[in-house]
Amino acid sequence: MRRLITTLAILLVVIVAGMSALVLLVNPNDFRAYMVQQVEQRSGYKLELQGNLRWHVWPQLSILAGRMSITAPGAQQPLINAENMRLDVHLLPLLSHQLSVKQVMLKNAVIRVTPESEAQRPQDAPVGPSGSSVPETASGWKFDIAKLQVVDSLLVWQQAGGEQINFRDINLELSQNARKQASVDLTTRVSRDQRELQLALKGAMDVTEYPQRISGNIEQLSWQLRGADLPPQGLQGEASLLADWQNETQQFSLKNIALTVNNSQLNGAVSGKLSGSPDFNIDLHAPTLDIDALTGNNFLQNATDGQPATQQSTGRAPVIAEPIERSNENSALNDISGKLNMQIDTLRWRGMDFSQVQFVGSNDHGAMNIATLTGKTGSGDFSLPGTVNIHNPLTQVTFQPVLNQIELAPLLKAFELPETVSGKLSMSGKLHGHGLSVEDFKHHWRGNAEMSMQNARLAGLNFQQMIQRAVERSSDQVRGTDSDVSYTEVQQLKGSLQLDNGSMALVNLQGRSAMLDLAGKGIVNLDSQQCDITFNIKVTDGWKGNNQLVQTLKETAIPLRLYGSWDSLQYSLQVDQVLRKRIQDEAKSRINSWIERNQGNKNSEDAKQLLKENK
Image (cartoon, rainbow, N blue to C red):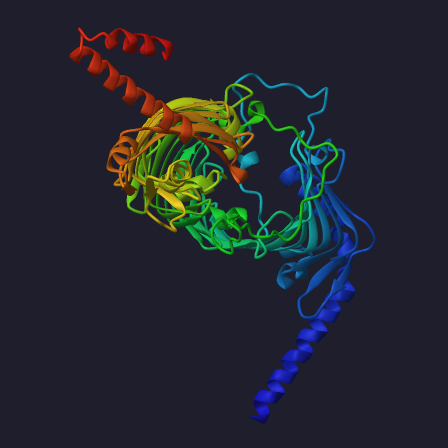
């Protein structure tokens, strides 16, 4: 044991002595020109080191440098500025006065990926013949360091003509082995417009065939987005995928995509090409997709006073004096083509729950065709094929909706309309207009549709009771059935609707129930939230009293007009005039019958004269 300890002590003394001698004999500043030369030969970039280089022995033999910068040829600003740089070197090559770096660490660095930091071609540089390309040796994999570490740094990223985005608190570890297989570990955050995005990424990359091919995988990508105009809990989730890039054909593929955002999940694959006219093929499956949670809206929970509840966001976004104008002209969809096949097991949208939703569509440089958009909700189902065209400044849309037994009340709430009517709606038609938002539908859409409803219920108004009470006030010979029901129910209701930029005309309404028959027409204004609808209603049951008058009332259509604001509807019910006209018609009918039976009677001429005077 004593011999082992003695041996280790001797070995330690030799190492310390050797390191000390090496530090004394080898001046790290001797490698300054070599490092500058190597960087420029391998990449064309200019390395600048300020201050003296010095040794750092423990726990790793390293060369410490002060401020440094790397600048691309002809660039206006350095690509990298760093307060400190550390080079971890191999010991044995130093014995022969050679520098072999195994790790580079940059601290408090500023990395600029902007137009000002890009390499610029000199104005007098010769232009090569058409079709010439950069030699393979010049465009191959240049990262020959085993490990790169960036600590507490900043990345400034900006595309030409775009906005500048700052990635702060960057901590990056990039390492590779002899087979050119690299691993990446990155954390950073982005603050912008009172929102903060935190990212953490772990992945691997295979560059053995670079630049012809790059493949890799993201083992774990986690993020969290919080701030203004977002749900209180923010948006957070994780993702993983496999990626492959073919440089010669400019084709890529993303496989085994697994994405979660809050309580939504998404799986699938994306492939395509980027050269020439980019083309994409997207195949996705979502076990759960909660659009309300992703947008911060909740239309069903915590609703009060009949108003849809909306989750409170953590704050409002700042008002920008000169917001960026966004139009169809600069939409990325105008520059690409592709196909999308998506299946959603469970979908929540504006308070409505859907299942077995299938979407099949394509895009041809801004002309989108929705071949299939189907799904189920409750006991009903829907189909919504159509087209969307963004070639013009205003988005043009056309849809052919087919609804079968869809609950109407949740649909009205989804489109921010009063839930005064409920029942199961079936409809087919064709609608067109511009814009895809709810507001666009309420202001800028047109079209026609045929509709029918089962068990339709109009809340707040009992037509039968209104008519019977009006008759009771006009006559003491009949009375209606006492009821405390505050709604009108119609088992079968059908008709047509005509939508014209916010004005919806209801045409040829026909309804029937056990207590009444109705027919009607009218106008509903979605913009001003006004309506004017007239129903002709026959109350076919629930009468008591004079049998002859009861039979007359059962056969008489009473006009009922509903008009005014949705919040305070008014009505007009002219029972007296209808009953008076009904009695007059009955009297005229009986007089005509008497005249026909008594043609020779001297009083028949007087009866005819009486009829003429009361026409």
